[in-house]
Image 1 (cartoon, rainbow, N blue to C red):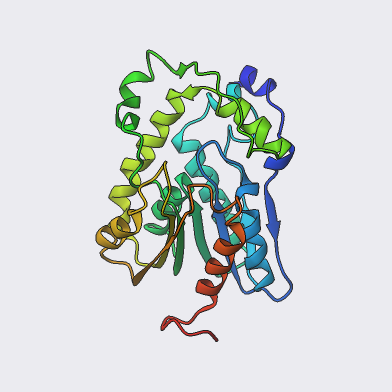
Image 2 (tube, one colour):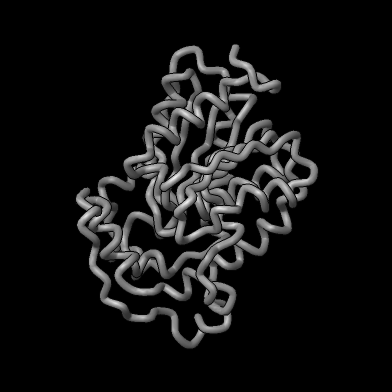
Length: 266
């Protein structure tokens, strides 16, 4: 593991962040997705900070560095980092809300089922992934941890940090990492009925990674939630928290977080 870590260097855009606006009384922990980076939720974090919330976006082990580093980590490491970040925020704020994108939504839901959380925001949470091979990855990974694909970043990926990220993590199929993701899918599904938070689910109607009907799944399974609100963004894909729909998503999250339980604004 130390040998793998010695090859790693931090992609500049993957630095974790924390903002504590003056007078903030509540905090939001923002959890990024599988092979993602903290910056992917930075615009939502900025909108929440402007609304008076303290925000924190941690980086999971093995993410935002290199493939060799990633291959030494697993689901327990990623969840443990999220718990540590929650504890760091809870040391300063009595109320800590949770927000997660894709795999981050799975981790956020699992934490919310066990830790105090009055509001839970799920952005395209990966409860219903559309990759039909994902359930088989725990069987394949021991024999074939990586499937070479040689994919290159697309023309829409112009940010240097995004390009570097995709070349490290997205050029091939990281089967062993996907097997860890599948473990989180299963465990978070089991945890979801234990969530008692108010929940907001936002998904994209053109999501090719997670079912656009995942909001209905959450509403059906989160039987002990205080409430479940669901917004589907027409025309949006899986990456709406940080593509050209990011400002719209940030506004929806900010307004929902600021609303009273009856849905009215203070």
